[in-house]
Length: 317
Length: 317
Image (cartoon, rainbow over all chains, first blue to last red; front, side, top):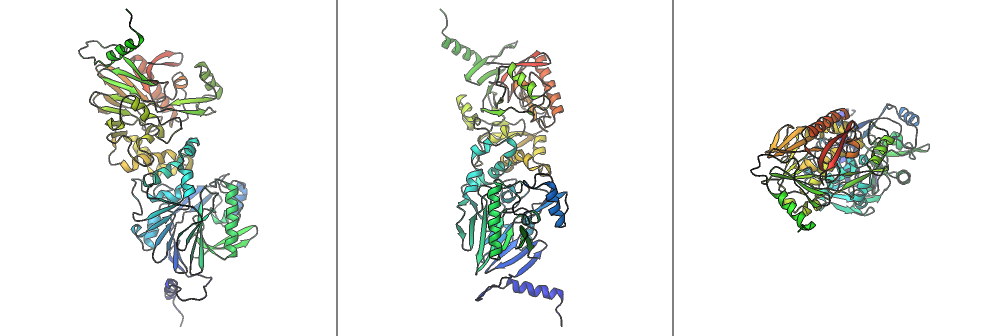
């Protein structure tokens, strides 16, 4: 007698929810649960990691989106992936790490400060069965607005009222430097203003860490400077299993995983960012890591496979 | 026996400080006191108006600073005024209206969010003999950062803790509209962020007024839309004397008072701004008004005299 589709899915979900207690060997294929469209939960040892989509921004595609590739080259890469060639749809995907004892949010979404098609983090959190008050820790990869604006509402209220916020110290130093802000042309000061809006009034309670430190048991920060001055990636590790959250080491996969030497317009130091990208991708393949990224194809968690001069990103679900 | 210079100045100051009680005719030449360099106090009936310089920004001059004049034309105008032709020095000058019963600050300065040569409002206030806690009312002309950033510190504290803040309702509506912000390209969102940083957390206590209203006895708001959607000027009137605070109706005088049809790059609607500029200048000359402006030649208060297709601005001191 064959299992119905529904009972098969239910059985998979149950297996996925079991902790891998007492296993002497660790499966290389982690259990995956699809909570809702775009929301996948993967098991990493005794932890789970859940993607929490914050929505997307649709950008008209123009020369310059990729600094070192022509519009025609970019369009060809999009067409090869079966995507529209007149725009780029960029997802924003914070991640939730549940260690059993802690609920850790990796990056904070756009709030009401991004594209109207964004700002859906709390909706995703609800679909994953959680309230904002249940988040006890927030770890920020870098200070671009799409990663931090969601932390405080337009009225200034903390979105996650019980969460301790941890941020990379070099990122704080760079953006909070008034002399640096003031040396920028007016049209380059918006993100400095966003950083001041979010962090100025809570400066005393935000913990700044040196990238490289293990922040919490199983959550190690890794310097990944280049996209911004203090951009940081994170290795989530439990029971011998690992997931690399590389944040903005790449923008969308069909362009920047396929072509790791391409530099998106948002990379502050394109060459440093390129080296970080190449390094983390080589590591991911060599160690067959689960990779999660803020702008990767939904659900934003998957694996890399080598292809030509770059890689393919295969989402888990 | 002739008066020494010092006792002459002291005598002038005493005269300037006398209210014009019982005068049946009003002098067209108001008493002027120079409090410190750049800080002038003029008497307007029973009120005094004091310029409180917040410093300057020095902008490298480039094509486009004036939207509808060539770089050569702009340089010629600067040279005619005896100014450098490779940069433009833009003063920022909030004004203090002391009505006897109230101390009203018109616009709030850059705080620590502008050029390093700015942010000197509190220093000027001190030179004028006042503490920030003594300001009871703040009236804002429009929401560009150099007018509002000084209202709250980087840490979020109110700079003028006892002041009620009054802002133009159409300015609030325009900048606080999330859909409008989100429709802008990233590099045009900085001021939206500044507005949210300053006003988001104090939205409940900020009073929004419809331009045209008399805000307080002797302080009438006047719609002057064009520089921004809700840009507002103010007529200060007491004892039959008037001072027009036109805020950003012009940028620096040698360019935009001399050439009222020129549009500075910061004018959101150049043609609307031009009409406002022409209208207020004609009124100022016809009524021989004292004029104060945020970016005028220090001390930022003076009178207009017609010249060619435009005017000259003659500072009071």
